[in-house]
Image 1 (cartoon, rainbow, N blue to C red):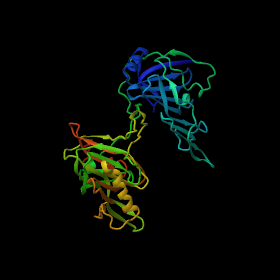
Image 2: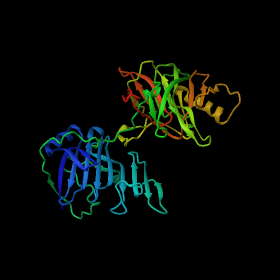
Image 3: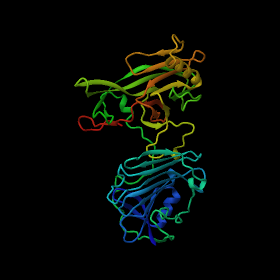
Image 4: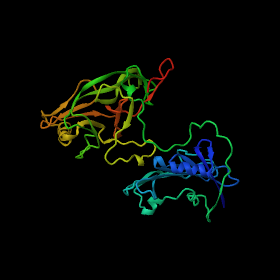
Length: 428
């Protein structure tokens, strides 16, 4: 079987076409520089490609997409280059097993198998079955070392990874594709890019009264004046963020700050909704975020705080780091007295010890708020409600000079900014 190999700067998954074709020499230069490029494998008489390889060494990533005769993606393999330059981790893969030629690409009813692997040997295999008796089944994959990792081929020496998927019984013969003239015009908006972690969204706007946002459930919400909910003492100079119900000795996220006392704000939005049991439209206000102000200087950029074990090179699309909670609760705390502060929280809220020194329920009409104070150090913990269990990212706001000015947790997901009433977009 003869397989034609072509190179390009980008791949448009919507039209299944390459953008701005490259010669092998140009692609080799991009490969050496770590710049993104794609490799497309085709056979004569077949409209859809066999496989597309999506390379971006600067992002530690190689993607491999296999297609069937109908042009549907059937396999998606995400490879990662970590500390060993000679091998690649099979980080993440998805296989779609279409039940017939009439089933649409990525049909929600399509059976799938997802494998999620980590370099330390951890992993998870999720199988989604179709029809009666279907469901989702999660297991730990039992894989050999050579099934988790693959040797990194040199440029121009990659095999056709999907050869077995396409039923090839003999190694293919590769031929270089012709490079058409022209620059391909403007890059299509939907072209592939390397996976990236979850993005912050319009965090700053949640503290700007008058800004309009939506949470996906309510079509329009208006930001109102932030509510000042108190202060937090951090004498150790290290701020901790965690779920106080997570009774580990160490907090999941820590952020260095100058020792001191910091203001805590709660962002709020006002909106109306139809109340079923009242049979009427109801006006209400709810919290969207909590913020610790390190400085009054406005934040102009946001970055996700990482835990000690978080490696950005392993993040798949929209993955987030953060603290976890099984009790819909997060907290800001002094890391130097974290264990004592969490113990007080457990004794006061969960065990309900009466008149407990160092524990305070802040019932001021705001969101759920509880404070504990360690008498020995003066360090404090402030617990706040989230809208559910799971992982909550911690966003660090930085000034134009790159200094940390605020620490924010979104308690109800990432909202979307709406245009201003006159049609002009609000500031980011």
